[in-house]
Image (cartoon, rainbow, N blue to C red; front, top):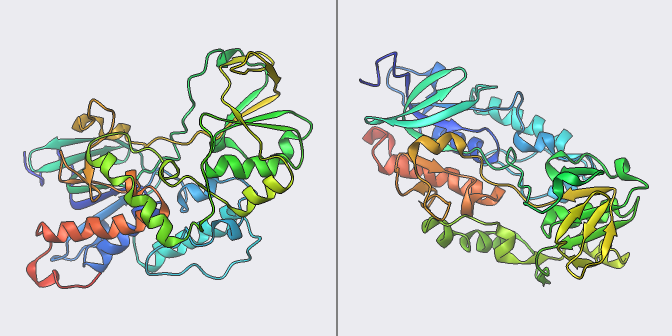
Length: 372
């Protein structure tokens, strides 16, 4: 079977899966290198196609909670080659950023196809077969940029199914006002957990629990600090270990909302409860804490189920990746994974993946000198 066989799929040089921060970064650098969207190809152009499961541009930003403002996300959402237009710091990020993503796609003629869900990626000779609910593609390379937003992590805790109140993940959080007058147990030591603790504690009683004592750091979490944090995850993914979070490497930095929660006396950490009961949680010392709501700010896992046919998982549960490339399937790049899971890392990984495609000789020699 050859790549031109219709039964195999539509031939394309690169399939990009996902049109969030990482996917659009990769598509931008492909465009800079002379690749063109599949339905805009010329006779001598290399091709790419971007597939996105969302119904509209914006990636996960369009699903963030109402109170996440542009002032809060400043500096972590910039896409390469096109600065974010000036925005009111008080504007909701989920209102301001999706139009920016849409303008970005149009500006660089990326022609994202959506909504398209990728069902499976498998090997078929010298190509990767990408099966979707809108047809099949025969790809020379796949750049996977599916992120984590669609896979919220719910820890296994005894009695969770017995709880009579409301349980929700940060993934489904909308606003603090919905919990006014209810006692809210917030689980998790990440940035989202602390931010929502500060917000919810303004309208009701909160009780904050974490598995480990947070390690607070006083240095500013600026771009150099973010880059250093990304580097700290690289060795884990190279070995095929689960990537873990960047926060697990950096510790917790003192954000404005953490300082405000501390000032108001609500930044009080308690150890993780040992069980959930119908009306609350049972603490390690046997005491009981009443709860009407349990909010799980417990992170996300990479959305990689569609890659299962490639059999890349190690016994430890991760995928061996170096410089965004899968070591056990070099035609596959994973960006927004491991050290590139932050927005800064995703932009760098998109550029790196395309550079490696060039080094593999995907482009004609005359095009290799085009700058990125």
